Length: 98
Image (cartoon, rainbow, N blue to C red; front, top):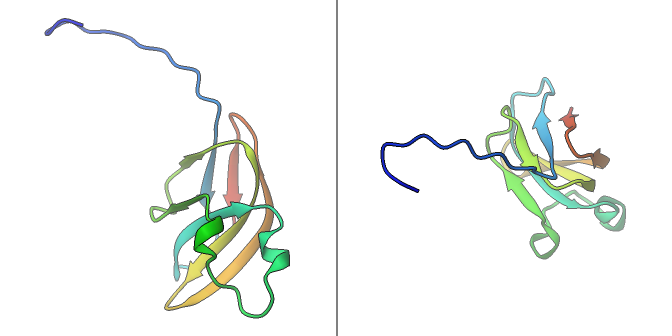
């Protein structure tokens, strides 16, 4: 590539978008886990660091992620968490977590 020349680069990204669109303003971030993680956890919902696939702090903006089925852990306020189970992300789709 040379300076002062405009280039147009097209890519084919195999991904979808996930965004928090719920009404609870206390939600601080979302964490993605393999589907089934929430069902295996007993007691109070908590993060499982060694199984975490990804995390997003800018929850109101679309966040790109790979296609697949995920359990989503919402961080709600100080030290409280809530699961959203079996969120399916498809290529080119947008998933709204509520």
